[in-house]
Image (tube, rainbow, N blue to C red; front, side):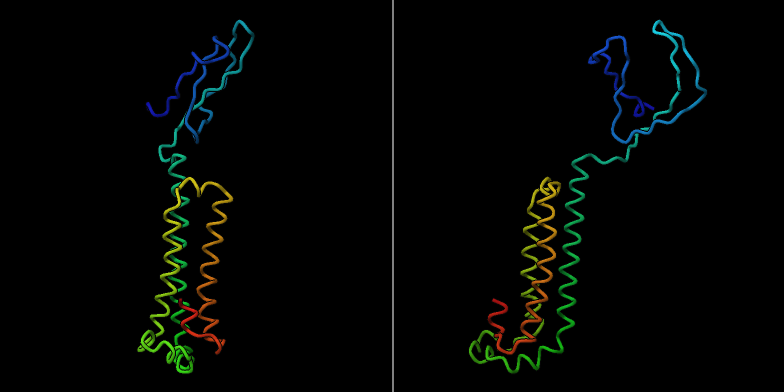
Length: 182
């Protein structure tokens, strides 16, 4: 079909007697038919008939770059959900630890009726803020390897930070809840 025809660039050629065609990336060229020898003024030329197939599903460079960003953001969203799940699994250790926390007395109005879910929500909000910052990064930045590595590293550090906050609070009785969540 018409999509499988290349663009003739003869007029731009360094050699005006040559006929050249330009095809899109990922064009498939396969031998088709019998080879033959053609005699030209320059001598014999081996001719190989070919069939050209252009992939109509090929993404543009912009689409590939945007896809990389979207995959990163989906991974990040999954990581935030994973953090929430991991923190919720720590809930049984919270009640006994919170009962001995001086924050309950010192910051009574702030922590009256405080529940583990509120701690989880605050930590997840911090994670979501980092995710939102990643959403604001231009797609082209995801194509710059150093920048992309930095974004992936920040995502991994976010997860480590979130879990570390909970582990620190639950393991260290000298740590006040007020210091961990603010």
